Length: 77
Image (cartoon, rainbow, N blue to C red; front, side, top):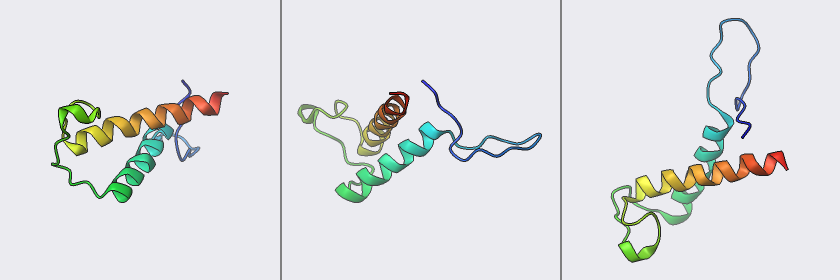
């Protein structure tokens, strides 16, 4: 999977900064939080089928990276 820098800069001895995967995940997570209004300590019930009873913050973070990976894959098609 190609994961370039989100905001590439071009000069010697520089730090690449945030990856495109991190940028996509942050955007996905922002959407989750704003749309759902979840409290980070909310625990999903085990039958909710969203990462088996994890805290909302943990489940949203994992899911956000799944969305980011899907966006990176779609860029390659």
